[in-house]
Length: 363
Image 1 (cartoon, helix red, strand yellow):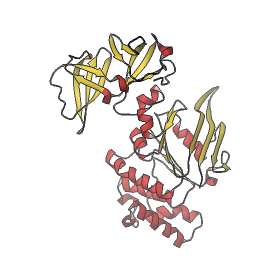
Image 2 (cartoon, helix red, strand yellow):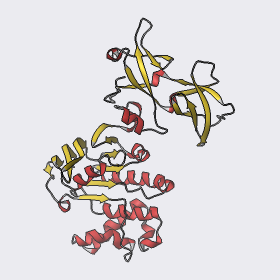
Image 3 (tube, rainbow, N blue to C red):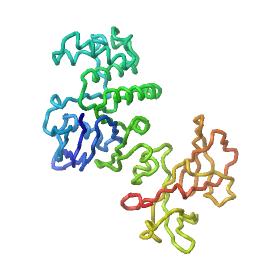
């Protein structure tokens, strides 16, 4: 029973006379049996963080602990981890059984014990009938299950994933996600998973750690990160279609707090003084496309010209051109943009307000 503790970890690279900070002051704990995903855009530092946890790279500062062991200086082979990469890298001349058992053979386990563990892992992954086949005879999803099984049989202390599904098509990803969840729960060790795919992060994780420019922007459960974003970046990165942002201004008065976006005025319910310092000041406003209504333009909404629709079965993503640029709205499956002009009505109850300089959520 261990947890993983990353404390004030940084990683700085030298580029000639310049220093490039890839990871800056990361603090993160992954409890025993917890599935935590590092998610963020390319270049945000998530893979560098995982490489430091794995021992493939060395932090410039800070510590990494597995339970009561400080592993910061330990080489990868002494950390008792399982690491699954994007590249599956199965041995083509070996059967599936021998691919899964190879690491155990190198570790000196008996053939009987090796194959016992392989049979258990194969049963869990539902690939028992594939054990005598060669990797070339398997589909991409089956090959990834074999690679996962090869990691499972080692009975690791910590499980690390570096974008293992990025080369799979959408259906294979959907099929494999619950397999990874089930397997890691069965193993019961801490899991650190890296991806740029927010759908993977939202559907698989106990908690999500959103990274940007080497920093952790927010750590929380999937629902919390989606509904209660800590920063403008998190609000814009998590959720599809992405949050629609506007430049606004806060105005107070006897009638309560109001939000002005150009000439459009919205009453802000439920504010308790957190916006006092922003009276008459600029503020960034974020509204999710699910919280923007569409009407015939008679209710004083933002005039909008309908451009196109993306029908997705249970919902439609509708695109409108406005004075603020393109705005995307989630409409119902029966929405048909039969007329050109509409009005877009923002729901102020679901608006998120951010400091325009720091990007930090203020209301």
